[in-house]
Length: 537
Image (cartoon, rainbow, N blue to C red; front, side):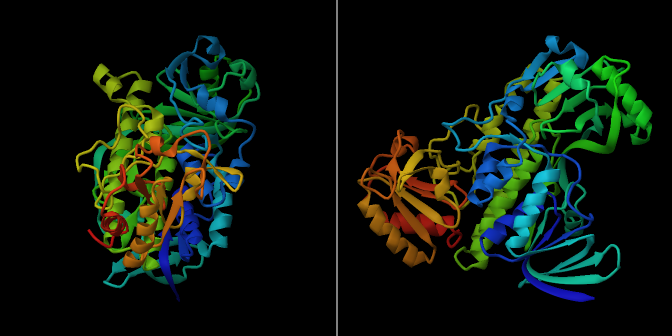
């Protein structure tokens, strides 16, 4: 038996757990990560990385390393949208089901990219270790106990049977849809439950390239195989192809029915070519479900990713949403552990991310209905564009000032104009001759943005930081300021006057803003900073 003491214990080494370790490490927080699998994923799952996810990796300093994994330019595949055919050989007759908006130079300094988690998990693992994460693969969590000072967890090495006792201040359960962490906490889930069952078939078929005539798409559904709707994708940019036929347990069908021989038959039927050369490489059964945990926090234990919310993969929201969970939680834990965040700051994780998780789960269900042909007009009308779900959601919590408790998490149209609770608008700037984005200003502390008329805010920022003990960086955006505008007026973008001010959190979300100059700048800013950092609930 061995004992380890660490600030944060993470359970699960998928994209979410590894991202949590990366983000915490970048904030100087040591972690221990236990994972029951023997290593990182070997299959190219979760292949679409959203612009917002790439912003987070960019802020953490590894954006270039993740981008280097992209094979060629994957953007045209995303632009191709979701399509449907009778067979892949009939690609010229494809019906476009969805043409989602995903990014744009006026919205983000980053853009979506395709890459399987089998490759990006390797990079996340390397950087997590560099940041002080002790990774223990082949180690299964068995129990959790909490007290006022921390969490005691028992884990076991699956090969040797050795017991590991971990004492941590906090624990993050990022251990997937069948989360042991969630089960040990007794947290229930709400939602529609299982909505379909599918078999992911990873395969090689060189002739498929010719059949598809270079047509690029996120996903292509083929309906020719009897009783089967089968999606095809290769967003990850290389072999193997991925096809995911649906099956029906209520009809007596199960994973055991998908022998290699039947998989080849289905793939040939979907392709419309009876002699298609097919090599089946791997098969993974899975369940498309919609379930959201009743809470994302129990004491010192937090749930993130699929452990907190699962939904059909329509939209590719799963891994991305989980990585956003990890980032939201990581900077808050780092602040509290470092003494600059108050206890109320951790309450905002559940308040913010559970609302977002519910909204995204609902949008995934809507897309699933549309793609499988059983959506009514009301369902179609409820769908919002992908870019709103990935970049345009709004946080509502005690740490956000100026947002109504019943405000919509998702709006019908993308609105990024500096409203409290939304991701700060991307505005091009010049810093020492270098072109940057406002998004590059946010990472390790709160930031106050002001204009040339904002000298009172600059002085107030210094006093507010001293009064609250919360690090606050002030940038003056003006021709004679710290940062120079580069073709876009920042004040207009953030919907304030040149004399206004905007308080932005380390995660690039607006916590508070003042439309113009005020007479009580010290009191207003200190109060906003105290609320946003959790020192005042």
